[in-house]
Length: 495
Image 1 (spheres, rainbow, N blue to C red):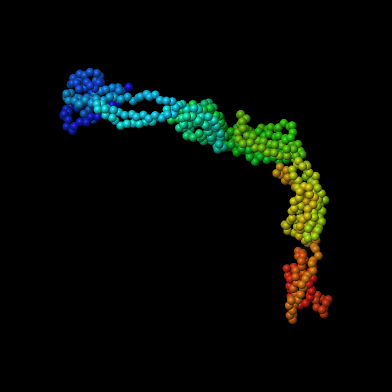
Image 2 (spheres, one colour):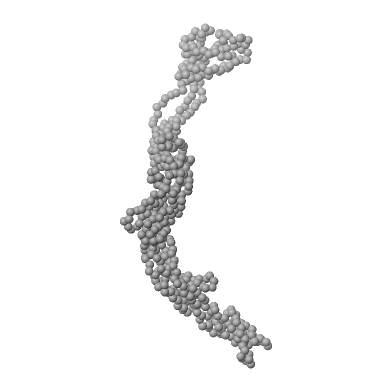
């Protein structure tokens, strides 16, 4: 094995070669440096002699010598061979050494130093650390999943070995085994983007410890969709007595690039019926109509997006439960009103027949004023047949009762025939503390206390009548808020 040994020449300013036509040197490297002392002008020496000529304008040259040998280096003038340099003894070094080490993850430190002879002169030290590495084991528990983002997958794995991993190489193959992507990671997961979509890909992981790469993990298969197929806005509604319509939000057009189907399943609860299964292409339909048995039978519908070629689920399914068409809901009948004291009105009706399995039945009692938009609404349970409602006196109302059926988050209402009502007026309480509190030549001031029952449709009437002319009274109408009046004599009547 040969290495390069560099020889440097340093000549004085005025050498004995000046003015000569042959300005060259000969460099002699004599194997076994002990013989260089006997080197003569005829160059008769023992051992191997290696020479190299150089121009006198140079100050260095390079010799290629075998390793681990003792040489004497002498420089001789090309013009005057008897003129030569003092010999320098060197030992060429080797660049390789083999050491026995223990297996495992152990760290060894190596020191490299050059020593020159004679004199055993030491050169600078070079230190290097190196770790012994047991071959890395395969990564385990490899999983590859689509992230939901376009053309992107998440790859994760586990690694447990004595030698700590310095990195991982993740390789993506196509169906033919061709490598289409290689990524590096320093953790046990990586997100890979811009992958081919709608085709079968295979992913494997190798562990790196320093520069040693271990065996590849078990390869996992994955198909990356451009978009995740998610069934949204699933709805089921009764269409007539014997059908239900199933609808869902159409998939985005970009998701059709991957060939996908929907599998729609109808299952009738508490029956021995076989499920009804319909397969449709994603791009073709977003609604189906199924036969049903009327009378509040429970049906469950499930929609699953699948890959066309393999039948594997490729997305997020959706399901919904609905009951079939219930019997017709009837309105309450026999609505009657009965006025009580204090503005209370009792409203009664006859109970409606209802199938318990067909949702929840309730009632609502309405009293709507004929003037304006004000109304009173009182809810009632299915077992009730009357309600007492507080209404304004002396007011016109339209009264009716509503049947309400709630089933599968859907509400159905039917109103009874309406009944007209005018609330009655109670007898006014008498006026008390009526007195003339001020009397002048041309006027008198009357005051009184408000009645104990304030009636909304009552008012005061002040009658002024002269004793000498009793057949011609003067009537003044006042609001109930007034409790005094200037008059020229008379009496007050509350109507």
